[in-house]
Length: 57
Image 1: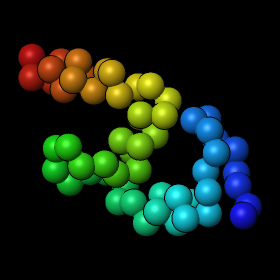
Image 2: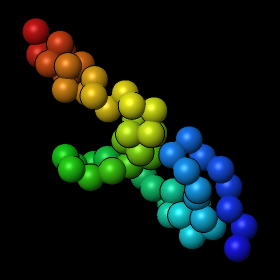
Image 3: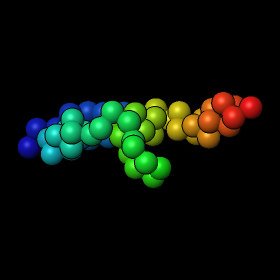
């Protein structure tokens, strides 16, 4: 099986296909699109609530 190295570890062929089929952004809360997936890997997901709160002000 061919694997690619990613920031979070090994990604297998089936996972690459799943990632390619993700929507660009989640449509509802608690859903995960490509943007949320990248935020989780990079670690910027911890800022999502703070950013949303700053827009309310």
